[in-house]
Image 1 (tube, rainbow, N blue to C red):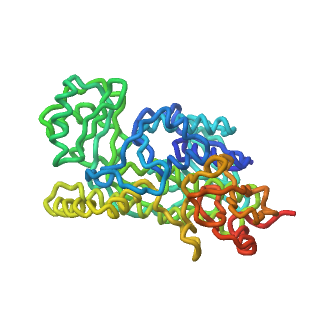
Image 2: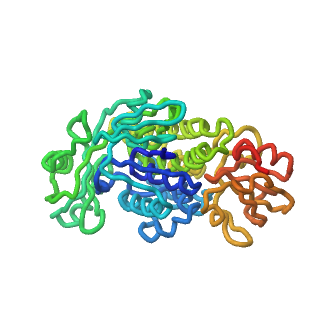
Image 3: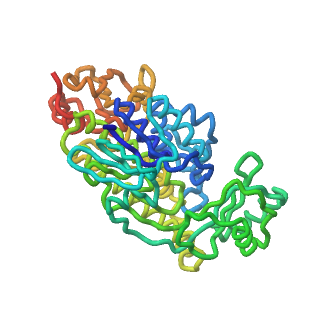
Length: 475
């Protein structure tokens, strides 16, 4: 029996598989497509995802391939300066196309021993008290202790589970592609800049290697958006909006996206769980989709591994839904709000002007950008220190940096007193005695995902909190 089968080999699925392997859990990824997609739906990473990569020692790989850009203008395209005093060492966006992100994460997963089988589509599943049986399109059957659906917005796993997916149906649709342009770059830039003063849903810009990324509103909403548009369809819409199609030709790929906004009402049904777009879909405003999915995987990985390896305390796996469902709901809300602010009608435009004025207040600008980049998340871990439930940024220590201590995906007690102990949990929690001028608390207990589970200096209080996240002591 396989420990965990993951349906879907996108960034969420591959990230989850890697997190499981850090804990010695067998992870098999089943991906329907025979080859990785070239479609570039996501264009980069925000601060929290960048921190996630730093916590696993992957950030240098991404920095070599990406481009750092300021954070201003990410909320509804309202042009403001990047906020100051953000609580992160990475106050930028890392521009990197989704296929490149997937390639780096896949290399990482393979290095850890993840098995990825391409051209294998999950079409059926049934579960019992001991495991889950999955059926593949070729008739093969596999057995696993757990299954996670990371198979996108039209998730087969979610549908087979009968999980509700309530929300707002698509009202608008857009055409997206990467192609060659014959018009001079200066002409394209000038005209697109003028159009985007009143229509932020239209864009034509360089995407690298001589190609251009084009996005334009569709003429109508097509029910099956998995059917790509034709180049003629895209050119027609470009001419309707810009008066020219800029001589676009030779598309590398064409795709559609919509403003459908939905969320699964349950992230877990027995031994089957959902993550990424299988659990939530929303418009790509603010570039939050890939980031949200990767962070789902980061939250779920260590919890599912604990369940498989047998040390998970009661309720740990269910805390995945309890923590991540509200986070996604907040993202759905902010994308809906951004969509309204980008509508061309007089009412929404008046509200947009008002929000733009409010964003001149640094606190408002910072608050809205923190929503987009994911560093404002606070899980409800009960009453306690103000750090409780928040992720801790990469503080400097006397002997290095905090995130350098987290590559293995274990819990961490950062002890500035040298008087505390994690005896009984040493197989799950590292104890590091070091000091940081940036940390105004005697000690913090960090979960494997970097969120603060306890802060203080009382040994008995620490012993009361360790079992909640790391199970019963050994020895």
